[in-house]
Each structure stands twice: as C-alpha cells, then as structure tokens.
Image: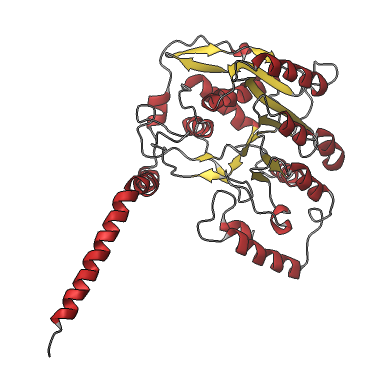
Length: 399
C-alpha cells in the first residue's frame, strides 16, 4: 500500500487552517461565550447540584436597627438603615366599601408598574384589559387596578409631569405614587411599594398581580384561572405563578442594564423567580413577601430577582404556567391568544388585542377535535422553533 504524502500534507494544511480559524473565532467571541455559555453552565450546575441557597438568610438579612415606619409605605436601604418614602398620591379606601369602614371582597388586586410619563399606555390599559367594570359585569369578579409610579426622573420636566399625574389621578383615581425617583435601579423600591400597600390597604384580596405597563393580559382567561384556584381543594393559598426562571446567572457585563457586580451578588445563580413582566401571588404569599421585605436588605435592584430572594427566604417556590409570557412578545395567532394569560411587549396594539378577545366567543366555548388539532399544529410551528424563547415554552403547544 502506498501513501500519497502530497495529499497528507494538503489535508494537514487544511486542518491547520481550519483549527486556526476556529481558534480565531473563539478568541474573538470568547467574552460572549463566557457570558452566555460558561455562566449558564456554572449557574445550572449550582442550581441543580447545590440548590440550597442557604446564603439568602445569612447574607441578605438586615442586622442593623431599622427606622422603618410601616404606615409610611415602602422603604429602601441606605448604609444599613431604611429610609421611608411618603405617599404623594394614595387611595387608602380603594378596597373598602362605600362606608369606607368595611372591606370589600376582592378577587384580584392588580398593580401595574408604570413610568410617570407613560400616560398613553395607562390609558390603553384602562380602555382594555384593565377595565374593572368589564371584570365585574362580564365575569362577575371584583378587580382593583392600580398604577404604581415614582417621581419623574427628568428634573427639568418633573414639575409639569407631576401636575399631569395629579390631573390624571383626579380623573381616574387609580395612581399610587411615592416620593422616590422612578428609574430602573429603583424597581425594587416599586416592588416593595406594592407589597406594603396591599398589606396595609387591601389585605383581604385573594390574589395580587404585579405587571408591567407594556404587557397584555387576557383578563377572561386570568379570572377564570384564579376563580378555579380559589374554588379548588387547596384554596387560594401558596400560589406564586408566572414564567419561571430557574438557575439564571447574574449578568456580569458592565454595559448591560442588568449588570450585577460580584460585590452585590457573588454567587453563580439566582434563586428561582418569575419574570417581572407579569406574575400572580395569593394573599398569604403576598403577606410572606411583605414580611421578607422587612427582614432583607433591598440592595438588589433587579426587582424580580429580589422577589425570588424574598420568596426563598420565606420558603415559597414559583410555579410555572406555560401561558404566562417571559420578556419576549408572543407571535399573534388566535390559537395562541385564545389560551394565553399574559404577553409582553405590547404598546400600540393593546386595544386591538382586547377587541379580538372580547369580540368573539372562542374563549367561552370548547372547540371541536379538528379545530384543536389545527391549533396544536399552528402552536408547534410558532412556539417550538429552535432558539425561540422568553415567551411561551414549546410545552404550551400541547396544553
């Protein structure tokens, strides 16, 4: 047998060139690989091999004296002590009867996190899925919708925006505002606002929902789901449901708004948490989260992660619901929207989607076998594509 050395040399050259090219690509993309691959491998290993998160109670507990006034609202940690934020706009009787003395039955208290300047988004919600009258008349459910806002961040426009907020609240009576600057890094403060408000002013609510002002909520589906939970054998207890992130790693890229330095959080993964775009907790879980905010420092400024830390400290675990959306926008198709609970990333199309929901009978009647088969096929094509994530999982296609 004879060997062709010329061919071997040629093959070796090709291998060397290919290896060199791959090394160049790895070197160029190493930072990206380190952040998106290595960090996820570490975090999933930590989540599924360790999974204790014992550091939560010891590392996030407040050991100094807290000057916390429960009646003044939510708080934020500065140098180991709380600073209370007073209410600038409040409606303490929102969950009470006309006599303002007795509590009304409330199935769902829905807090929408909104920026002060987002009047159009709030108005679109009022005209659509946030319409309390629709929930009462069409679904027979008592719902309260409030918008949580802080102080406008733009100092030059602060006075004019604040006047507009006061005028808006005079018209609709649904704003809750505290005296903190409304920025991304104060989202945890806004989360605490919600849980402290419900503890003081609406403790009888069966469920509390926290939502962004750019999501769409299929209110008929949500209310039917919550009514079923309430009437079930377990009742409305131990519920924390949404789009669950498990083993999520901290972002270490300084150019990301989600950047978390090692000094703030040195561990490889966060405790399980639900996407902050929209999630629901039962009244007893809301009370536990409230207690946790009194015991844990609030230096973690990513609000949904802080929620996960509070829940872990109180022994509460999130439950996945395949039709609670993550950070992505759900592709529009009636087969998907007939089953959905929330979808993220909606600003200009909220009224259109609401008209689609209330303008047909699809959500009120079961479909036939062929229709269900067709919708399953459509959902598989839309939701089970490679690299499609952050809306609904592929499992939603089969539920």
